[in-house]
Image 1 (tube, rainbow, N blue to C red):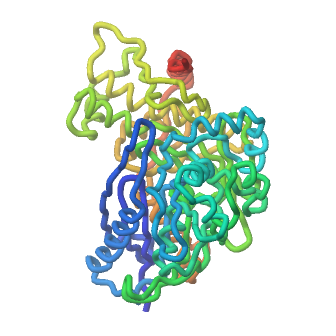
Image 2: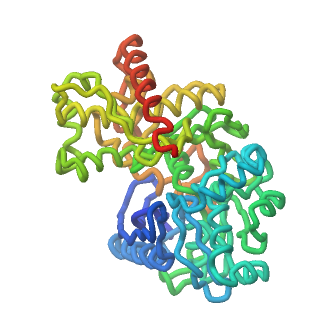
Image 3: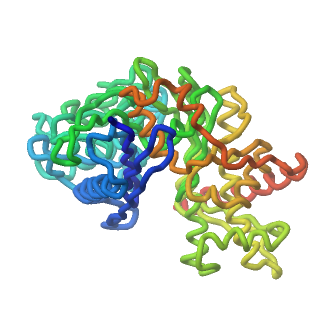
Length: 497
């Protein structure tokens, strides 16, 4: 009798495996970090074999830890770091190059070329994305242009492309299945959002042969079965979604107007817009949230590059404290920041500004400024950036938010959560289960095999740990936010030649 669903959560710095029971509770977790490779400034790579080996290792370890056999697992759900690009030989499963990670900026010049040729409007309209090195399409093109003989082999159908979900699925099924889901495919710059299929015109502009690409299948559905030698049974791989969309699903944000924010190294806000594809005019991305059966659900997404990373910066570079958790204690030692604003635009600003030339700025310093003010300003910056995105989201979607569901490491910081509620003027809901990304993958997989009946059953499982109600006066909120907008203006365009 299968009593569990296994989620494989393949992230940017580590691979995790989490076993969930029928109530959506965590039964056991295993985690393994792997190498980050920086061949030159602005370039980031991973070894695809390390991604696979670390993911397989934790999958085996979590079953062992829980004393669970392969046949007791109803299904496997996969969620992944998105946009990271891998090419491999179909016949052998051997990668032809390191994976190019989503953070990698090596294709900036090619993106500029495409803009100069006047293609931006077409890509925006058809894919919901902006022409930026962040997405997979230009990374595929780079590999085809820079690995000797690769383009010819790709055109001959010998090479497979995949984002990390596709790579794991290929290896899990012993090379039998080459597929992805629309949430991941919608992050490549190559998929038509309306049709949830690859677009020949975009492929030709990008110079990517169709023969490389995986089949696009619904996010919840049986993709294939694992090779029994791996986990002791042929387990259906039945759910796949990119990490941010999986978190939206795991937070049970199934109705239009429901939103979640994941506070990790960066922060990712997604707003469910239902069956309506809202194309943003103000720097948000339109993305597929998931496909269940024939029904595609869309979302608006705003990415904030630096969230938790600003706290790591205070810890590692400025040595203001030794442990990230101390930031909350310090922030509470002062009634406010004393007029100090920290704009953490260390690598530019993303949504809704999309300015790669913005740089970090610390403004409003006086002789009385101390480390507590800096810690508080850093935490407040995370909340201000989230408001930047949410204001635009609600306006463009014509939907108003009744609460924001939150997850990710930084949600343990009660000061940040309260300030977030205050600066938004909206309730912030922290759930009991924090592993919402993995949970979303588990739910998608479990739905496909009947482990859970429908989304209504899943919705009933969502439980709140704590609600943070806004307590700040409107006047104070707008004054503080006005100061933030002024600080951001100072940081824009700073590094332009």
